[in-house]
Image (cartoon, each protein chain N blue to C red):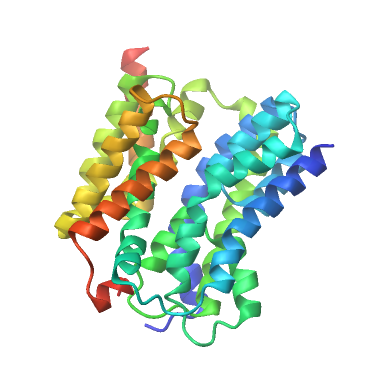
Amino acid sequence: MKLTFRKGMYDGIPIMLGYLSVSFGFGILAVKCGLSVFAAGMTSLTNITSAGQAAGVDIIAAGGTILEMILVQITINMRYSLMALSLSQKCDESFTPVHRLIASYGITDEIFALCASQEQKLRPSYMYGMISVAALGWTSGTLLGAAAGELLPHSVSSAMGIMLYGMFIAIIIPPARKKLSVLVTVIMAALISILFRYVITALSGGFAVMISAIAAAAAAALLFPVNDEEGEQT
Amino acid sequence: MTAVYIAAMAITTYLIRMIPFTFFTKKIKSRFIRSFLYYIPYAVLSAMTIPAIFYSTGSMLTAAAGTVVALALAFFGLPLIVVALSSSAAVFIASLFIR
């Protein structure tokens, strides 16, 4: 099937539903940190990133400096650079610089994962379709959570905290089942991440994730170099 | 002032995504780097999930219940949304018994 705008929207529906519930939690958090409902919604619309936004509203609440804000965002969100670089290799020739400038806005963990798993080259319209429904879900969920989150019982809102991680598990397990190389990568990254959490605790969460991922992916690249087709993630 | 914070956050995040996506468009020749880029998404998501997932619900026990459900359903290849919602439902049900 061709990767059209409509196909992008269709494929983006699970992301939208997932984002609706996850961003609901962010909306609750943002209001607790003193943001207005509008400011919470604008944060989600302009950022579409979970961990970065959660750290960002903490900094706003604590009255941190702008420099701190920028450094924390770079640390937590640096993984998007790696994803963008990886996706950049997968774009077809219709992806002009202007399209790249626009589509960059929507490179999130889940959109990246779905785009990277497509068999065909990426077209701008496909990414736009997926990004538009995802951004809609992310922003409206935030607005709902910010406006009505306090009405939910605590047991419901804390159960929602796991949804994002549930999605991550759903993305990594099926390929790890099919390919030993991916399974080894996933296990190595998890072990290094655990090491940073409990043994070498000097690094902040964002840095720890970056270093764990880079070390595991580099080791996997040495152990299991990919052939040409795999390198394009086809 | 909140608007300045949000703008700083948004611009930083955009540039992180935009620069590599827009300016590194040539096909990468190095087999090592292509392999690295192939494995990086799995490594990032795994490192983000473990061990953070166990702290995502306020109780390690309920989080463990959600994790087991997510792993089991993902193993059988169920859709993203089914895995995520079931994992969340498992946490909710577990919390009824534990708290």
